[in-house]
Image 1: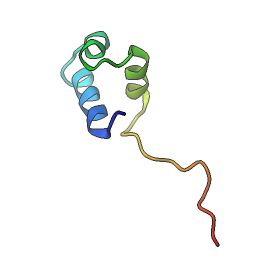
Image 2: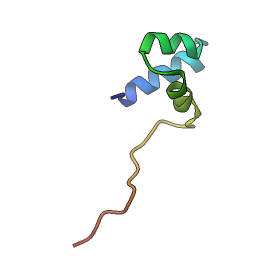
Image 3: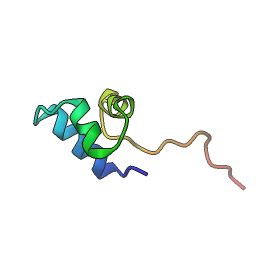
Image 4: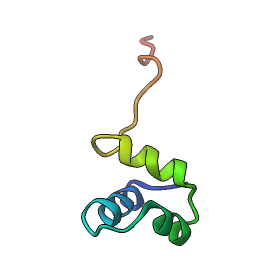
Length: 56
């Protein structure tokens, strides 16, 4: 499971440091598609509920 800090580090390596997606993929063991998904998200990922909590 990837935690938010790892996603932030991945985004920093690619966007700020100029590392390629392929090299980050090799270092982290994640697929290139997963890394591209993290880059496509405009901001940090957040938890989203699928349904509102039920009130009793």
